[in-house]
Structure formats: C-alpha cells, structure tokens
Image (tube, rainbow, N blue to C red; front, side, top):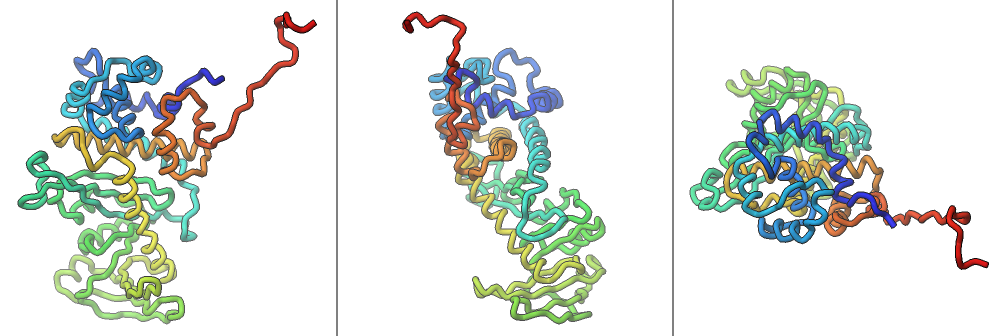
Length: 389
C-alpha cells in the first residue's frame, strides 16, 4: 500500500518554490500577513483550476471537506471564501505573472526538441489574441463597446510544443497591432500573424531586428512587381514574386523589398496571398508555416474550455488578471509534468484524470499511466511465523 505523498503534493513538488518566493519578495506580497500567504493562495487557486471549481463557495466547501489533508499538501491555514476573495482583490497580480514566465522558460527548455510539422531549425511563433466577454456593469474597467465589456488575451505561441512565450492582458478596446510594440524580436525567428497586424512600420522593425514575418496581404495593397519566379502550380502555388510598395506612406514606412506568395488551398477552395521578408525558404514552406498558425486557435479554444478563464471569482482588474495568470501557470505545470514523466496522454486527458485523483495517495506516474506497481513479498521474513509447523 502506497503511504507517500498525494497526487497534488507530487504536482506541487514540480514547481520551483524558491523562484516563487523571489517573486513574492519582489512585490512584498506577504508583507504584514500572518496567515494566508501568497503560496497558500496560489495552491488554492491551482486546486480550483485542476478540479474545475465554479465559485469561491465551491472552492471553500471542497477544501474544508479535505481539511485533514491540506497541511501535507502545502496549504497551511484555514481556507474561507472571504480570505480567497480578499487575496484576489489585493495580492499583486504581477507576482503570479512573473512566476508564470519562470514556468514558461522551464517548459520551453523541455519542448525545444519536439518535432515540428515543417523541417526547420528556427523557432516559429504564432501571434494572435482572443476576446473574453464580460458584463460591463460588473467589470466597468474592462471597456470594449458602449454596452459591452471584454478583455483580450494577446499571446505569442511557440508552435513547437504549443507553449505561450508572451502573454499580455488588456481591455477589449486595445487594438491587436499595438501589442507588437511590446515584443522583443528574436533574430532568425518567424512570426506568423493574421491580417489584423498589418502595420508596415512595425513590420519593418522586425526586419531591422533580423526576424522574419509571414502575414496575409490585404486586397487593396498597392505594389509593383520587381521579380517573378517560376512555380510548380500542381503544388498549389500560383505565384512567387519580389515586390516593392507604391504608396507614398507605405513605401516610406517599409522601404525594402517584400516577397509575395499566392497559394491555392484545395481543401478549403481558397486563394491565399502572403507577404514575408524571407527570401531564402521555398514558397511552399512559407505557405505551410502559415497553415501551422491554426495551433494558436486551438490553444485559445483549449484554455477556454478546460481552464477557468471565462467565469471569474472576482470583478476587479487585479482579481481577473490573478486568476488568468494562475490558470496559465496550471497549464504550464501540467505541460511540464507531461514532458518530465514522458507521458503520451494529451493535456486534456491528464487534466481529467488529475481532477478526480488529486488527493489520492498514489504515485503520479501510476495514476497517469495506469501501471500497477507490484508489492514485494519476502520469502524469509525477519520475524518467525507462528502458524507454520
């Protein structure tokens, strides 16, 4: 019989607790506190994410039913919904944001050698945003439209492993293209974006940083062809051109040449036109890289379905950002455990299993792989057997 740690405790052991304490000290998160620490708060909110709790009352009821087990799982104080609500409102959300970025760095190291659909040594990122609708009367700070509130989750996703490398949470009124100013381009990397990020001044900044972009061209783009390369139309390619911009403003914002590729997708019966500043890769690979952008759409769909980021436990900006960053940390923790234990199950399946086994005293590898660990029976015990004659 296994009498060691619970599954939840084994999960928490995978977190860098020392780094978390440094994040707390950076913002003095525990200053003046005697009971409910930032670590307790993080664990309670992570429990809520892993077990799909719907409300603060739900979290309180479940944790109090397990109060005899909480101390050995890292939660060292009595849990109440008022305490959690106060922490959501007042603990600096940047503590959890900084800790999530530490987990991002760990996850990227683990997934750096994962296979990618395109044989490419460079890192490929997809950049996009998703909108989370809110009630404007409950979240007056999250202004979006006249009678509607919303926040945006701007994400830079590493397509090798689907690990978010950059996340910014803004109100719904912030245009997507403005977040490009906050990116620090990596030389040699590819940034795949949709048409909404067309801003030639910002795209030229990527070029100056020796980074590459792939973006759909607008239908009203004013340009002239400089060179036209021959293409194999049986592969779906229709043209591969080197172009220059004609507009007075656009030609000043982006004074260099661009590459224009037209591709016909037989599956969707659509013609796609891309602009890129990479002139060395084959045109078909450029089209394939843009096709891989669908991974970020799947990522947004996945986190909305399987993490608690659509219904919030608090209404303030601090509470919303705290919940989202802890949800992202939970996603990264599961991704790290999956890679560390070399588990072939999907993240969805792992989350489903964890949701019903968190406080079971079983080896986590046994829980996630369904393998039995045989108990050794010794033929020669030290103590004499009284019933064998």
